[in-house]
Amino acid sequence: MDLEKIKAFTTQQEKMARYAKALGHPVRVFIMEYLARNTTRCCYSGDMAEELPIARSTLSQHLSELKDVGLIQGEINAPYIKYCINRENWEEASRLFSHFFSQQGMI
Amino acid sequence: MDLEKIKAFTTQQEKMARYAKALGHPVRVFIMEYLARNTTRCCYSGDMAEELPIARSTLSQHLSELKDVGLIQGEINAPYIKYCINRENWEEASRLFSHFFSQQGMI
DNA sequence: CCTTTGTTTCGTTATTTTACGAAATATTAA
DNA sequence: TTAATATTTCGTAAAATAACGAAACAAAGG
Image 1 (cartoon, each protein chain N blue to C red):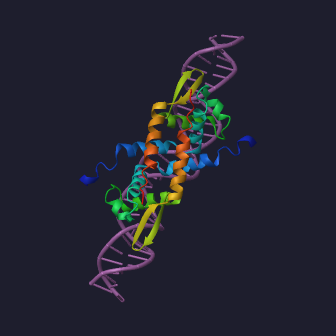
Image 2: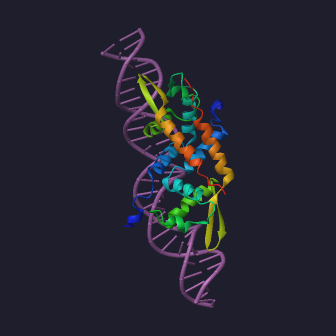
Image 3: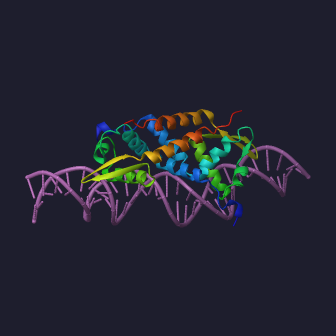
């Protein structure tokens, strides 16, 4: 095994990739934007489902992915679930991307 | 067919998702950062391969994905290929992400 | 012309993702 | 208690992704 390559990526690179992957589908971009512009309202899965051309179970899967990566969280209010952005991680992602795109070298 | 849902996503959302997806793997994040910090040097696939724990053919695949989405471009200088960032699209991605993360509503 | 060299393309395999409908879950309303 | 409701989980299928090694390619050097 190549000892020099065992730790190939920095934690930041791995986090970046993780957040980027989570945002790598239009439905999930839509969800994040929907939640971002409705911070004062309760956001239910059903509300978003009405604006999306996918099955409710599929939407649920996308919500899970965003939850797994920490970008959103859901507060149970059965039978409803109120979703919102996880600010701490949203801000971490924001910083990571901002730093990433500011890296471009100057000639 | 549900006529209201035919055009579910904006062009921006689709572009965001496309760029995010391309950045959704640590190897590809690494590549972009490598190219960003070496704008003055020639960057060859082989140089990057030496720092990565993957086969050269796999790296080549990742380079293709970044090329397909327009984030990088390769200038043939056979048998070498000199890679660099596609500034126009890099800046578009930068703007899209910046705008995306600035959307968070204020309470 | 043949070989070397850096890189890609091909063929293949294993895994992950995306999607759906049906069934399960959990609370409220009747 | 039973029904209705919003949502998720399950089971499944099709497609995309990630990975490798072998083979192909295209230019330069002998």
